[in-house]
Image 1 (spheres, helix red, strand yellow):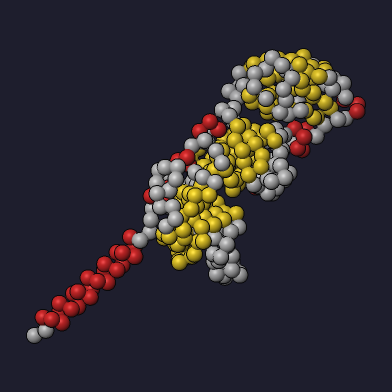
Image 2: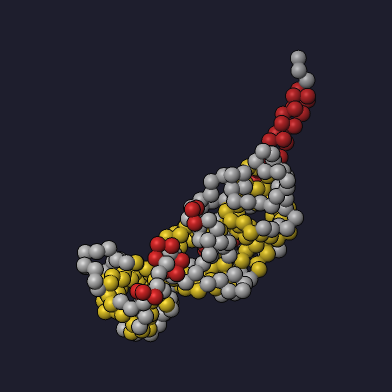
Length: 322
């Protein structure tokens, strides 16, 4: 006959172990609770443990999410976090990258309005090369919203207005407003990336994480898809140049080939839905008065007058009026 005390002890031990396992699993704080669905985290100053997937990374800082959409992301600062080598997948220790699933501890802090995990310590490297959520599609007028701070977002048909400044910031417009962006290296056009980096007139689809700087929300860019390049960058139209772009009062369309420097034709301005807004009779190299155009983004087609109207345009390009 089994000793009742022994059986009771074993049951108690099993129950204790189950409670410890449950406690260990329950110790991770959901990121929506870290964000608190408010401007300032209710957990500010507390040391917590979180689990999630890396959505964007910038060396020793990165973003993590544990669910899709608003309030479910956070910015992490972890210069001491290192992922050990894992041949044949990667050799040598590395920092966290997109697709890593991590369990970390750290202190909740509010830095420039961003709910941030600082002094991050890796407690468990769960997995790698996981697919990340697409991110929430936002128009420019939807960007200034606290609920997306720290989360992955996307922007479509973003026309570059300014090139990166010395700090790496550049601006885009999608017709609904303007958004400041930060980051992106020049890369391979064969992979839908821009070899020259963001240039005025380029049109991108942009992926990144929302970051607050003061009262402004900035897109920390993780990747881009090039929809079209500015006229100066297009390899199939190297003999034409349209400037300035963005423009305000006047525009010049020029042909860089001396033998074609002067030519007449039509410059057709359309809205982003393809509706004709204005048609200009143009001589290449001369100023075009565009002061009647409202601020916004337009599609422009140019066709020399010696070509029939049914002939494909010599080029098509986006024009931003400020």
